[in-house]
Image (cartoon, rainbow, N blue to C red; front, side, top):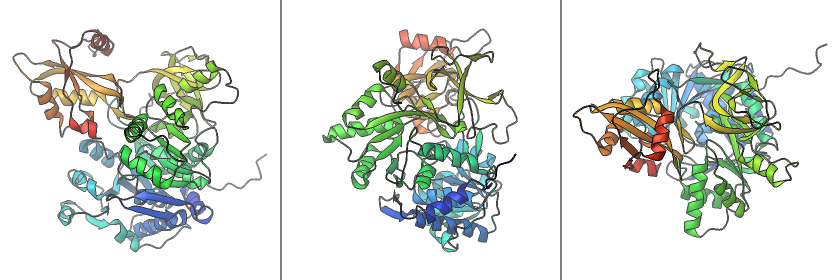
Length: 549
């Protein structure tokens, strides 16, 4: 027997209407590129999102059009979060911190026809705009120099001018909930980045999950400061959850510097915040420099992207702020597990186990541990294997990629090694991949190695992760020079400028006679790490860009 329930579609059109008609009085505070404070209600946001969608209609961009963004955490970007997918188009958020070659590959692979970007990203985009065969319109946010527009191979228009042509519609028809709404690309840790197309349904369900008390627990009584770029897995899904809950939202703009965040916290009084551990470590250091003893009403910080040091948890606890570890990935719509401590964890051992885990899997998702032969291991907190996950907001494929090595019997292979216990707590012990996670962001070792090898004096190179107090991990380069060739760390660093993102460039360099390799010719990174920990002679050459990011 079928149910008697209505089969309404879940999705961004429904969320847009709810944000306007029910949560319309909730507010958003954002910071512009020139530091100005802008406040708007959810109702204002929804109406401007409707203007954007209608203006794209007027210009002949049909449903299914992919709209790429190269933008920070701004109100205009958030308006695109709603207006583009709610009207049946697809939003594609591009990481502004990737190298231009990667950005070009991602934008071309996603078939972007419209690009919306902050004006400070215009020059970078102009360098590869000609590589996008479907590009028809560039929309700029913020003031731009007149000379930049002629560099574009298509029409360029200011965002406010564009939406002035639109009607503030919020009555967009519901989209099939299984249609793509937003595209995000992986970090490309083992090759080229791969696209994940989130459905309207997956976004809705993940946002509901975030609102639950066992997760971030957003409500209309809260004010959220997500110190998370909107291009990072949809801002970890937090903007959608805030719109759903009617939670006031503070958008920090392009700056995640500790002084800027502290100023926002003082001015706007958030109750909940989020971000990678590095950001909150820097905020703590700035507080100590100023002699600050608290952060106003802030009561909870959800941390992800990297393991949260226990010292940082303890330091924030001393300020009366609970710091909670969360775990997720692009393929799982971000937050998939969070280390909330349940009531039964009354003993010190239980509390320590909960706090040390990456998190407890949220309702709706399932996790398991598998050995390298594919056999399922016991969920006893002891057996170590690959963490695998499945559920309605976990991807089953990549955009236009046919290979299915990432799946095993319908479970997503995360590439992380770890344990799962009987209470669903995930504890990661290692990674199958050799990428470096620095400040919550991936640095792909293979791509960095290849860039180093392009130097004419370099014969071979390997890159490994080394511990770093501020960034958790930083890349360290081991180089073999060609016979009779000379090159030092400063020369190699200079060679990498313009070839990779500045913050990828290693501070530590070592020069050896040969790279250890396995019997099948692969770089033996296990052996390299052993040497690095015991006898590697490092040359330190720190680029200023790393300290400034």
